[in-house]
Length: 387
Image 1: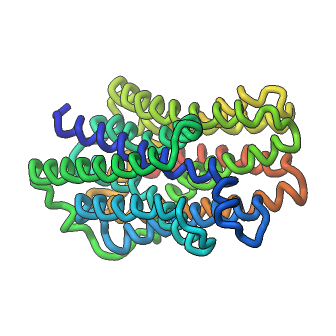
Image 2: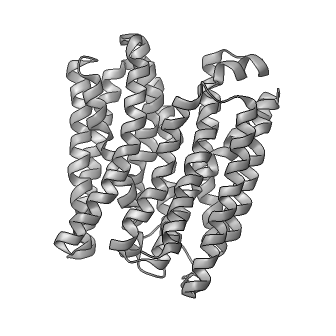
């Protein structure tokens, strides 16, 4: 592997890790921020509104990326957006205006645009078997940052936060420079030849969107729903359950990319990578069934099974070029990501009220059914593309 690709991977992972360590600290310090802002609502309502605002920023980021074509000028785009998000972070902790806080968290939610940038950039320069591990490592910085944020919250002061902010801007600058160097090194031209129009009439766009919703909507929302469930059933398990949830998601993200690489190397077919998601989502469904029938008795083991779906993240973002073709994959990546990211808003808005109205058992039944649907979608995509 070229040294420039290694550098891009290292700085991509570092950038996403630092950014999401910093952004995840907000949720963990919600009580202190609530006391500072003093809104005319309860702490629970404050946390809920701010969480939805953050989630809403994620699909908005996809719309911005697709509309402005950030992949066409990725080096400049990444630098400018990362610098702007970094600017919002200290303001978040200094402002006492509740409405400004909502706006800032929405802006910060757009930060998941990095996933599409990683996917498109690695697809520009590398074939599938060479891109799967660098892409997975860079994207894996996001769950890693979230997991590390829960560990570092007790050690980070406002002063440390400003240092983290500077580190984000510095790393984003280096990452952008490396991207620009690779673009010039490889004389990349195909991004200027992309077809106009959209891919929403292509069923593959919707299949991939529904698949991504399993992570962007359901898995992410579980980080909110699981503590609410444990508050009622077994509050003493909250810390250990969330630690297992956070760290296993990060670890399984990397494992999925590595397994996909080795399966590809052994079988020598891109379609072999589809075998991992089909199996992983079945294990995810099994994890929810354990909670449905055993409650919190085997909760930590169930969470490990549930997070098998994280093994699919790197694969989902490594296959768009094979699915949509050289001229369509960049736009299609933004488009299916937008469809999936609407789950950031839809899923918690539907499932949290459902949990309180009918009970968490019904919510976990939905959680168990959806990965089985996604497993079937992967089989459909495999046959659609390779048969």
